[in-house]
Image (cartoon, rainbow, N blue to C red; front, side, top):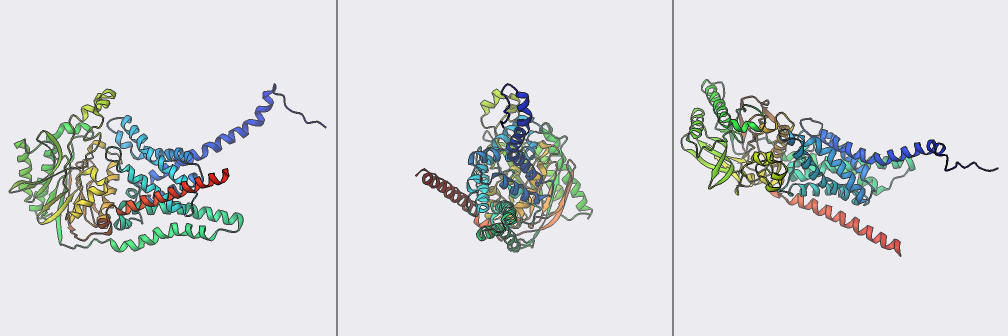
Length: 536
């Protein structure tokens, strides 16, 4: 009996037999890539304005499932897709007014860091206790992204998606690195728990050490969170202050609000004077001091007497010092400046923003960008200069730390106001450029994390919203809508004690980076020894 072999001249007979298998093979090859990208989207959905913080856990569980046991090259590609799935929707607001070019360029660059993390996680996934090493590798990636290029871009730190989450108290223990580490560790740990359960069902046995490590990866972050709750308090330690937050609104959203600079100043003065009338009528408590947002006076009050007169009249009407966000030119340099304006003495102190925003307040690679798109360079005609000193205003006896807008994303820029004596923190911001995008809610979540991290009241005065008052435990007690004129007045606690996160500063992050380096070194060394042994 002889078998019939299809002739190579009869392709129609072969195609039906091979096509289904070929399609299945292609689908199997695409499955990890699609899963990695969808896991990134799931991580995005966990971020504000949604309160689905817990979705970060399955997002990292799936990410770990895709990466575990793969080569570093596969991890690099899968990590990049995870980064794109996460960052493309998260950062879409960066292109609201300038088009998709800058948004896509930013995402393409930032996703490289996530790709490198993916490669690192793949490498350490072969180690015992891999969730620990993998979570540390993620935090090392965040540490790098927060510093380079152009002094870093920490937007999208895992901690900033946890303002409504149960892990939030960990911010007081070790800042955003420890909070983020706990979330990622728990996500990878859940992956390992599921894997061990599947293995047990398949074989009836699970290595004792592996089971313990899997359980600890989930239990330790939860127990740490319960212990850290004792660090969170909204009790006053050095008295209270009645603070007023002013949101004057802008004539229109978008970049062209800058052409209405005098109107923006007038709006904030008018809202302050409206509040003063309510105070005189006994409807609202007299504030001890008033906080205006960033860019509330883009007309330099030191160079324009009419702008100075508007601010002075507002300060006298409310009978309290005002922190005014101004654009000031001094010695030929431009500064994004907060000005402390006393109703009797006028301007008495200033704070110059130190972490200025690349491509928004200054243009790196200006000559190259001019060749690509002249519109981008004309939007930022003159680069802002950086300040050099932390900003802490003494306002009616209270010490108010200042972190202007973009600075709230940087650990050091908020922390050093507290180490320099701030009893509460203000984050004056201007989000009018980004219309009604998610940007303002993402930034508000950052301020909530900072409140818990340093156990300080945080106020967020914004030109067009959302302005808010946040307690030291991260609760928002008052907030405004978007693109409305409004004011918030509240008695808030002033605090002087420092959390472990404030005291330790950069040390927890550096320790986690060392853990990541140790894991990578161990895995790479083991791989080299294995190849040598195999070659003998």
